Image (cartoon, rainbow, N blue to C red; front, side, top):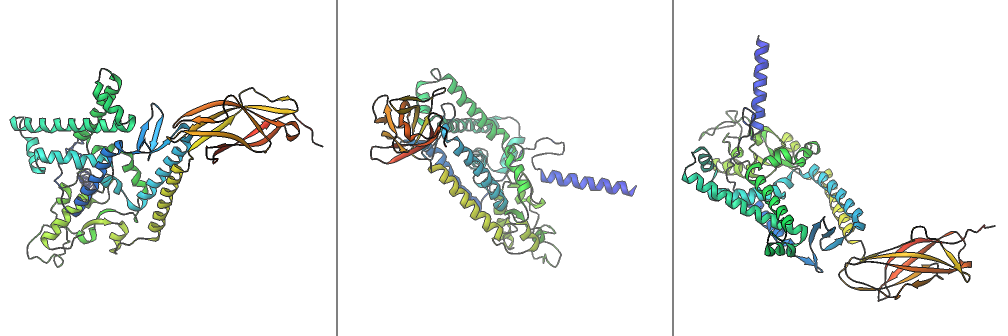
Length: 480
């Protein structure tokens, strides 16, 4: 009988712990709306400054051009891609693929060392939710207590006015965000053109923009923190990447336990009490509704709101700050001062190398690309002691400048080129041009049925802009 009672107590404790760790779920398993208190403090100020920069970049980048190219454009429909002003074509897909792989490795290594800092400081979901929509909610409905009171009261004139105003502003902001997101796909000029000509002229694009607006509104007005706790795969990925040497937001349980309410003039150490006064401020300020004191949790986005809340309380009661802080689990357990380990240093250096490698891939592509391919089914022909092959050339100009190009066979040296037109090829900026040429060698120069050959393309200044290695076909010869 006692065994059953103990088991029931154990299950009850585990269930209570589970409910405490999942702040967006009530006792019945249904969603519990989170009303976080408005944060304030040192880290909140830093996050505000960071958000101002990121929002400025988001709303400003569509209008920035480099060499008349958009700074960033991902136009999948028309297959136009610009990254940092550099055009990328289907021929450059392998670079984008390698860049994507490099980015994944970077994220994994970054998480191993620095935890989920990206989620709380740089993630677009957190940026718009906490720094835009949540601030508007505070402005219209008030802080945590006022929001909870408004949520409980009947649908009177005040509630209809405030909720209606908030939802209207949310829709307006979602519409603005969707327009700017669309600029990253088709460019700001096309978006302004669509707005000017109206939805009747661009019905499909108008529907796409409305769909974007609905998605943004649904995400920030209703889904909210569930994007981080249920939808985002990165939160689940970090669970297998972090270890005791990973930097995260931690509660110093050795210093904080045993928890007890604050009493003036009490010697807490003598009474066997920890520094945590169980004020719950770290809980009510959390945007995902968790209790950081329950240990590291997947729902924690490292937003540092609990750090600011706890530091404020510690300062008021005269206890040292840092009860909740950026730390490693090993540091908390050993009560040692944080320092960069050799693993962190090596990983950080490797991350810098990855960034450099990604930058190298982005820029080491050349200004143009040339290919010389033999037509399908074609072969050589011999006339007047000379062997001739036909090639189809394809030139891609990756710049905005017009180039005047010439073609020469640089290996072997005695190749002659016959052009079907002018020997000076004019290639406009961002243009793909195709044409035919014949390449001829004296018969005695071709010793093999397939002989290696290098064709070089020169600009008007005589500088080689690209080379292409191919083979020149001739008759089979038996070498004795």
